[in-house]
Length: 287
Image 1 (tube, rainbow, N blue to C red):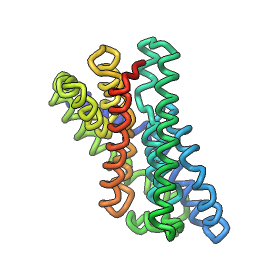
Image 2: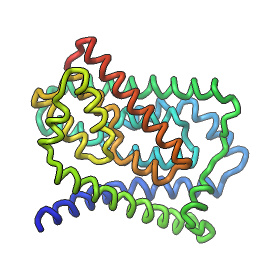
Image 3: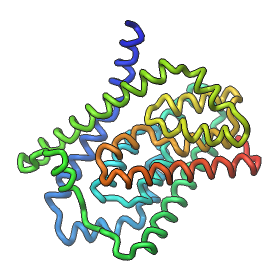
Image 4: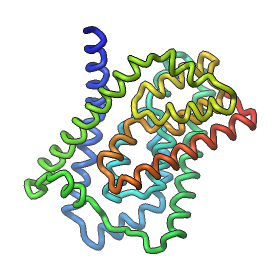
């Protein structure tokens, strides 16, 4: 019974922390949709070029709510794919609070955050650059109205009610999935995940990347704790934390269409994170 209560509590807390970010993001998007015209869409299209820079800077803040906001904004095509990836790569989730609690050397924390920032910024800009070359006719229209159509949110009731409906719908989805993930992690056990991560030098980076894909704060907690205990190398730790986008992936799969697009984004995120983890590993970079 205590285990069930703990699982419900953890899933509830994770969801509650995200609600303010979701509501504010949806509210802003609703007002943007109301004001949509050639000027607004033109401004969005122009500002997107600097998106990855802003995304990486915002992503390093210790709050996975920014990754959920980025997923929502991308679903409405307010931000570019490069900006979304930049936020995901830079997101630190539970990393920073744990480092601070464990009294890790501030210089080491700064190096890790700087690496995540630079990697997120560079990869985000590169992805947007490649996307522009591949498709010069990229669709720059806002797609906020499509979110409303899928959610049947009755936007004519006004931005406030519409944003509230969006927030409730997505929050319920996040809670249910978080409940399932938290329960699974509790049943499987952190020891099993630790054993899975402590493989060979090469495989540990890939394993950390796979664990990082788990859209739950427990993933980043396990990766950071194993790194601090000396079980994971710097390369494996970086690979896992770069891939880890918190609950952002959940919101992406809930809000963005088509589904194939989300699978590709997840694959790209995994490949980038693991590749950089292997670079750190074989270059002998340690913190």
